Amino acid sequence: MEETWTMSREEAAALYRRHIGTVYQLCLMLMKTVPDAEDAAQTVFQRAMERKEPFRDPEHEKAWLIVTARNECRNQLKHWWRTRRASEETYQNLTWEQPEDGELWDRLLSLPERERTALYLYYYQGYTALETARLMGANPSTVRCWLFRAREKLKKLLEVDQNG
Image (cartoon, rainbow, N blue to C red; front, side, top):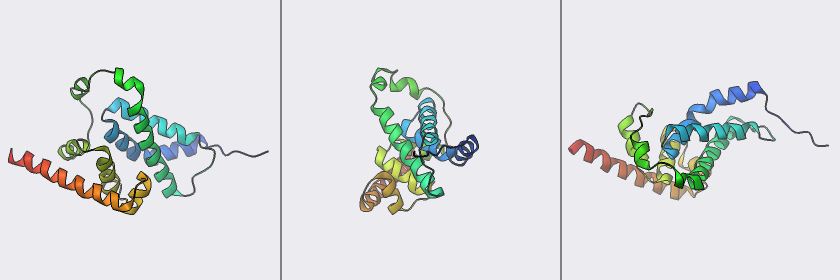
């Protein structure tokens, strides 16, 4: 009979404390609304608690949570019930918490998902282009291209803002 590993309450709480900021911020960036980001982050940690094996090391733990968060957000965005929700305009009028660099964050949210995720992992989380590529399931040269395009788009958006 095979013995299965189960995460203890203490391990789950410690995992949550270590990574809720990263997971929530990534979910917020992808989902664009606080309630959706909270739901997605909660689901990610629930999946982590349901794992049948422990993480190999801290880097594996963090990478697994990031990939799982990205996949969960993608799944939620594709789900049928999203097409039957209130309009995007309704959500635009809600106030929600943003990082301290709110103007930059707003511009970041306007980028295509791949570029947005690549920038977040590279600049906010400190992953290299190679590590970002592994997390996103892409070729490193493709990630470098996304980063280049995203920086160029952000630069143009910020220049337009400054010039009125």
